[in-house]
Amino acid sequence: MSWTAKAAAVAVVALASLGINDTVPGDVALLLLLLALAVAWRSVRGFWRIVVSGLVGGAVAGLLILGPGFRLAMRAVAIMDPGHPQEFTVGGTLFIIVGVGAILGGVTAATAHLFRRAFAIESAVTAGALLAAVEMTKLTFLSGEVSDELFQLGISPWINIPLFGLITLGYGIGAMAIADKAESAMFSSKSKEREKVPA
Image 1 (cartoon, rainbow, N blue to C red):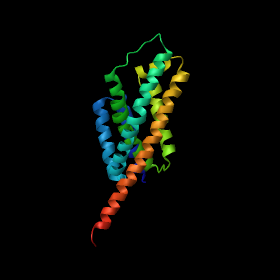
Image 2 (image 1 turned 60 degrees about the vertical axis):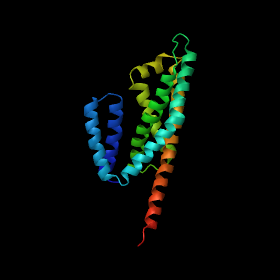
Image 3 (image 1 turned 180 degrees about the vertical axis):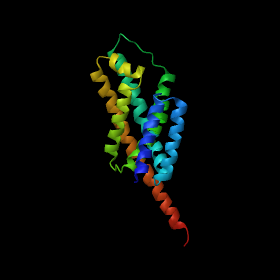
Image 4 (image 1 turned 135 degrees about the vertical axis):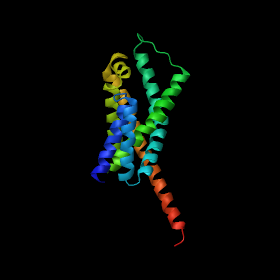
């Protein structure tokens, strides 16, 4: 793809991440993100198919892997650190599974899938590993109280970080693999529709 498409994809990923972490003020991040999305829409071939398939892959993998996995990891950390008891409510569990897993996981994978298509990263494993590396870097160093808890709760950050990292890696690979399936399903259905149109 063109350098414009690549630059737009990088901008979309960076601005979405900075906006979610409140590193850039919300209004400014949203405006810049919309501009980057407009450029990506004009310069990335199959933009909507890529974004929608990434959203589907991330939401499914987030609902099945990221949300439940993070909830179990949080429970494991709490058990290893009886000095800091934490309450686990149904509402909190639903927020992590649906809010963090499905919604945040869907948005994150949509931007990651756009990035991988712009840079022609075909392997779902490679793309998923890159996604996991970026997300774990953000979680470990740029997430405020959550980052502090990774280092302060449980037995050691040397246990907490790999534990959450494995879950994030599973989510990343799963999201990219499902996005591939969704994208190819959308592509093949469009091809079939074209074949049905009489010449």
